[in-house]
Amino acid sequence: MANKKERTLVIIKPDGVQRGLIGEVIQRYERTGLKLVGLKMVIVDEALAEKHYLVDPEWKRKSGQKTIDSYLKKGLTPPSDDPEKVGDITLGKLRKFMTSGPVVAMVWQGMHAVGVVRKITGGTEPLTSDVGTIRGDFTVDSYEVSDEDNRATRNIVHASGSAEEAEKEILLWFKPEELLSYRLVGDAILYDVNLDGILE
Image 1: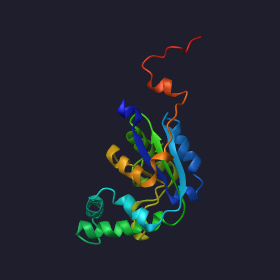
Image 2 (image 1 turned 135 degrees about the vertical axis):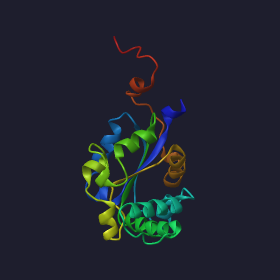
Image 3 (image 1 turned 180 degrees about the vertical axis):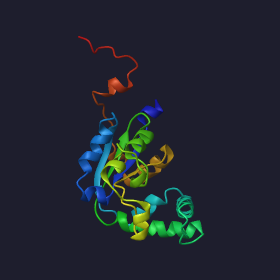
Image 4 (image 1 turned 30 degrees about the vertical axis):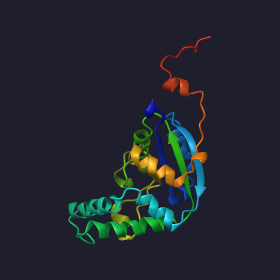
C-alpha cells in the first residue's frame, strides 16, 4: 500500500510561472491519475532556496562532480577541479534563479509518484529531454547556453529525485496541515483490486 500513497514534491520555477505554464504543468501530472494534495504560490527567500538544494548533504559535491564531468566530456576546462567549489558556483546560480520571482510548490500523491513525475518532467537539460516531456516540449535552454550566460538552466520544473528526497523536501516546503487527505472518484479505477460496482 505504501507505494500507492507515495508523495513527491514539484516546483514550477520562476520561468514556468512567467511563461504561463502553471495550468499545463498541473494538467500533465493530473492526467496520469496522480492526486494533488498540496499547492501554494511562494516567493522564495535565499535561505529556503539554499536549504532546498542542500537537503542532500552530498548535493554540492555530487552536483560539482557532475558539472566537471560534463565540461570534460565536451573537451572544455571546468571552472575548477574541486567538486565542492564547482558545487558552490552552481548553488549560487540556482539560489539567484529560484529567488527571482514567484514559484508554485506542489505535492503529488499516488502509485510510483516520484518515478511518474520524473518521467513526465524529462531530463534536467531541456535540450536533451525527450519530446513529450515538460522540459522537452516547452523550453529550448541548454547547459552550454546557461554556462555561457553564467546562470542556472531554465528548465521550468523541479521534481524530487527519490522517495527519500521527496520526504525531506516536502517537510521543508509544507506544514503537515497544508497537505490534504481525500478520495477521488478515479482512485477506484487506479487502486481497487476489483472493479466491482461499475455495472448497474
